[in-house]
Image (cartoon, rainbow, N blue to C red; front, side, top):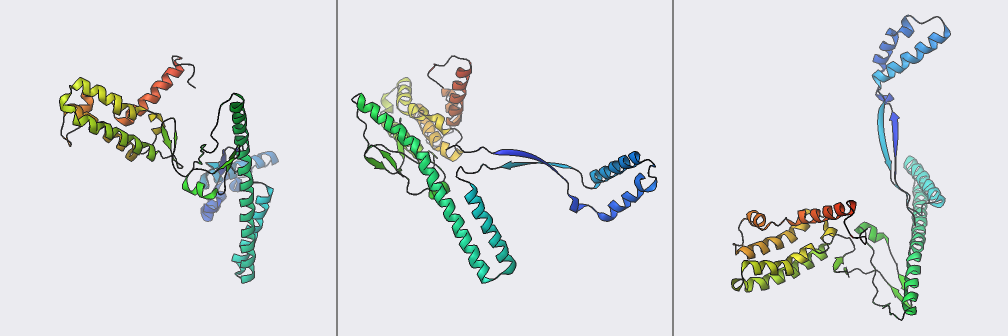
Amino acid sequence: VPVPGSGSYHLSCRKIKDIDRELFRRDLRASRLCQNPPESIVDLVTCYNTTLSGLLDKHAPLKEKTITVRPRVPWFNVMVKEAKRICWKHERIWRKTGSELDRERFAKSRNRANHVMEQLSLTCTETALLPMENCLRDIRNWMITDRLMINDEKTEFMLIGTKAQLAKVKNITLTIGESVISPSEEPIKNLGAWFDRTFNLNHHINKTCRSAFYHLHNIRRIRKYLSRESTEKLVHAFVTSHLDYCNGLLYGLPNNAIAKLQRVQNAAARILYRAPQFSHITPLLYELHWLPVKYRIEYKIITLTFKFYARVSPETLP
């Protein structure tokens, strides 16, 4: 369902109410319009317009203002507009009179407006899911034709949004073949990355750290039998690969989330140099030529962008 985009409007306004009337009256009396007005009609009109414009610019200067209008939801129509208008009308009457009868009318109109918006939003959601179900049906038919099997019952889908947005969505299902699937509330794994409903990627980061620390624990146990070069190869194979995989998804996350991955990298560097647990980490990372996790993410995105614009990346990349 297409959603209309937001728009910006530039407005020019004056604060007429803030004008000092006495000062404005004094300047008007001292102007040429009142002291020595022109005799011809054309000059008099010109003097009148010029004098008033100058006084307005002096006492109430013109100000520019930019207003950003939020996009309306796609299901907003005349019915919602009329229901909200009646609700606002009854609310003004009730606040003006304060009577119990007007309060009941306002409550009824408000409930009706909420009911209309809820029904229209559900209809809009069903309409939005229809193209997805049609696409899945075509994929399923194609797989059956080519003697492939799609596990209808194992198919998962997830609704992503803020907690407030997800609370508004109720009774959403997706039909695939003969199976009716409800949205998953648990994190879902896709191509090695874990996605949750709010898309904060905390579950993915925790899984990555858990796996990396597991391998670091095993490497630490045999570190005394390994050279530095062999240990570095093991760290790159079992730890750094976890930190770098799908790390482009982590761009823009808060520092407290990236700090968990940074602790993994710090632990790996200390194991390589057999440094104490609380030793300063910056010299070790500098000697290893390791960028911190935050800058590794940015470097990866910048490199991919440069290769795309320089046309040296594979054609499969977008």
